[in-house]
Amino acid sequence: MRLHEYQSKSIFSHYGIPIPKGRIANTAGEVKQIAEELGGRVVIKAQVLVGGRGKAGGIRLAKSVEEAEEIATHILSMNLKGLPVRRVLVDEIVNFSKEIYLGITNDRMERKPVIIASGAGGVDIEEVAREYPEKIMKVYLDAPFGLHDYQTRNLAIGIDLPRELWKSFNQIAKGLWKAFKENDAAIAEINPLVVTNQGFLMALDGKMIVDDNALFRHPELVETRDLDAEEPVEVEARKYGLSYIKLQGNIGCMVNGAGLAMATLDLIKEKGGSASNFLDIGGGANSDKVSTAIRIISADPSVKVILINIFGGITRCDEVARGILASINNQNKKIPLVVRLAGTNAEKGLDLLTGSHVRTATSLDEAAMKVVEIARRKNK
Ligand code: GDP
Ligand code: MN
Image (cartoon, rainbow, N blue to C red; front, side, top):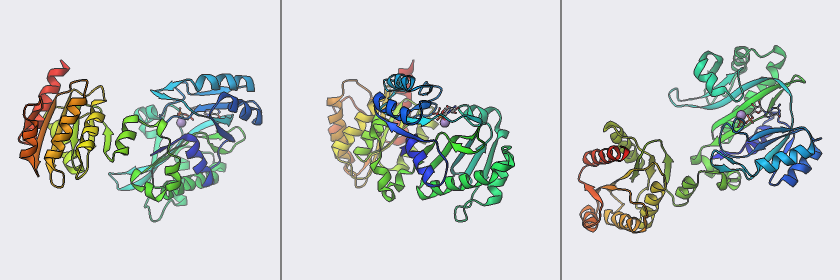
């Protein structure tokens, strides 16, 4: 679950990280009022769950209350990378001399949390990481021991931070680590952490992603979940208990079981194709869930063909077949389906499918070959 900037910054502030004064607004009228309270000079920031808002025009400075209202009207009518802007954060303007990047995530290869810092923070951090990797400092943590003073000092030296800011940097890094750990975050990031003209450190932007699998421990966060701001297909998939993750390819996949889904993606890759999604319908799915899954996969315009790979255990293949047939009847665009059914009631399922335009396969290997072939033909 991705948190908005204002939510992340509010959490950071609970952990002692300085943030600008500001409030969230739904209308240009509210923005005007907040701008008045803050003295007129404010920054207005679109609250949408995408990166690079600054470059996309979603962050603008206003020099007066009138200008703030004008800019707010404009930003609140924008679409940023496909997502409508429904709310803006209005913050006091902070003038700064340096932008720092500071983030924590889990490094899966090292099996450890890693804290990353750079003296070249700001909107071009991705480019910096690509072109000048030596400007990115990394320190690995041992989770039970947390972050040590010497580690934050090494980071501070690495990013050329003036000595008088080391103490404050140490407190901010430790606060970020605590926020990361206690909220079961996958990412906690400040970009930029600025050195203000008054000479202290402040978090101007905040980003947090909380591990969905830990959300049961954070009912207070779930309550603030902003479904309007998330990828609509992922929201719908979640509602039906389907694990759906969008990928870059053109072969849709519907599979039962996460392991089988991974194996299916690997096999598609091996045959020279690429999957458009990961989708696990889970165990014991009924026909409704199956047809919903197919509808969600088909909604992606890049999908040329769908591979359905079911190994029936608790899941019954005849129930899956019924779901497939229902989805064919409701589909307006005809996307070819290749179905491999094995296990519980597979024969019954395949019987149900004869006579429909569904292609079947007896092995996963054959099914993968077929979908890759169809995807290739349709791409021409
Ligand atoms: P992002 O583009 O989505 O990462 O949004 P940010 O909140 O990081 O804002 C982008 C850039 O706008 C920052 O890197 C800053 O350079 C600038 N910015 C954001 N807030 C302020 C502010 O209060 N004052 C000034 N002068 N610049 C700001
Ligand atoms: Mn940023």
